[in-house]
Length: 406
Image (cartoon, rainbow, N blue to C red; front, top):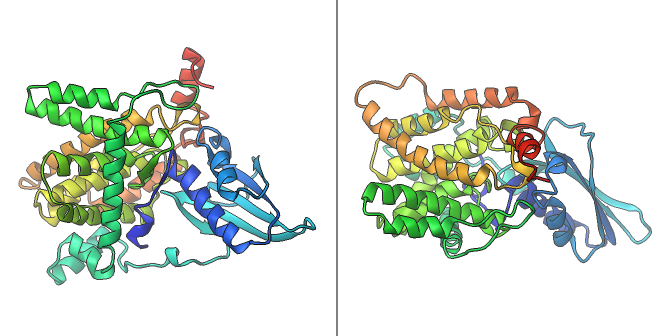
């Protein structure tokens, strides 16, 4: 599995697959084509179908500026990866200098056809949770120590990502107005947070604060501000909400939260390696489902639970997101994405609650490795119009019935 640097990445929203990944590709391509006088970029698959709503063309033009660039939305794609782009650089005589075929594989990660880069290097030798547990038990270590064993220099980077998460939530609960785009959605994170602080019930206050924090990060994402992929931008609010709550409301140290991020990162890495974290490939079960699983594992770890309870919490969180579709209205990462993150952070807490109580009564029949494989299989069966294409589901039903989406 790859470095956790490929799991957690800070960048401008609203979509890791549609903005961060193309931006990374364009920056790399621009660096190796210093003599280019113009560029052509062809978008395929989900990048073409929802590229306008995700501002894919805008981030490409901005990244490749000041070189003149033409962005084309194309339909025919001959590769197995479901989302990608072709970058072409031309010289002053209009001769082709370089051409790249780039695949957007989820969470802002990319791979380039027939090219190898250091960020694709395999850092972790184990490919299943069971194998990781066996290694941890044999070496008397927990999951955070497992990460530091293979990535001894990762802590400063995780701390940087934690600070970026904090900022996304803080800025979100201190911002008002309307989200960009034709849906004209009012930002509500600050109002949710203020209402939470007015509640007398500690439990209700906790739950509403978690929702407010999730909304805050996702409203920042929808506003094209900087958020952290965990594992994606569309699902950025789940982990960010818990990290912010654990620090500001529960008093956990940043040191402990970095450890929890390491644990969550391994969970996300397993999902990414053995299935997918891309909504265009697996639906929203791959994005918000994965984020919920990662957050449940982080919470179980912070609560001091065993490897067994951490696994059960992650498994429950994922199992009950199986089949979740990705059908954003108008191609914007707003409906149902923002509300879905708010619901997911509550489900992460519930997954830990169930895991810690069920684990003392029985062994979990479904293992985490099983549910990852099931998610991958389920994603392959979800209709393409329900996988980040905006061709079905809420994206079409609401447009037909409400006449509010473009």
